[in-house]
Amino acid sequence: MCFEELVIKLSPVLKRIIYRIRVRYPFLGEDDLFQEALIHLWRDFQKGLLEDKTDSYMLQGCYFHLKNYLRKVKDKNRLVSIEALLGERQGGQEPYDSLFFLRDERNSDVRSELNNKMLAETIMNNGLTSREKYLLLLCSDGLTTRQMGQRLGISHVGVVKMMARIREKSSKYLDSGK
Image (cartoon, rainbow, N blue to C red):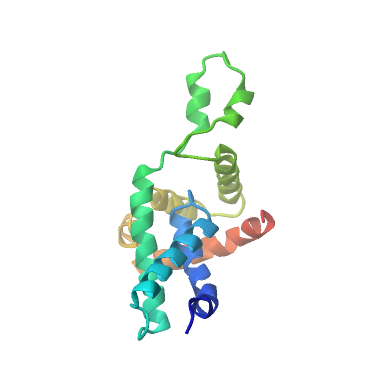
């Protein structure tokens, strides 16, 4: 099997995996993560490591590669908080318009970061229960599913189900933004 056929066969499931991973790591786009997964597959394909492997094995390899990649990138990524910047300017000494053109070598597009924050705020304020909001807060703190369940007093399976409900509720906002 050639690499292109492999990519066509694995792409739908790989995109679903990336969507699930991206919920916890919103600072990278789905296309970036998809490219990273394809690079991982390409390297393994070139080395001949995928010849006798099942689709499930290859997808699990991509999943673990992306999780490790995100763990490494998250530590190196510096997010810009507009609220913090606005709080530093006493009485509006600098025009706020200049904030929207900030560029940082670690965060290439502040506008997309602002759009993501506005989208997250819209989702939080429209239809989520206080418990679901608290779960998202715990998720953003980087807690594991089991740790979130302990804090909420439910099982980790309950946490997974709540996250699925949150994804379902927020899908209308995510689809309309594309």
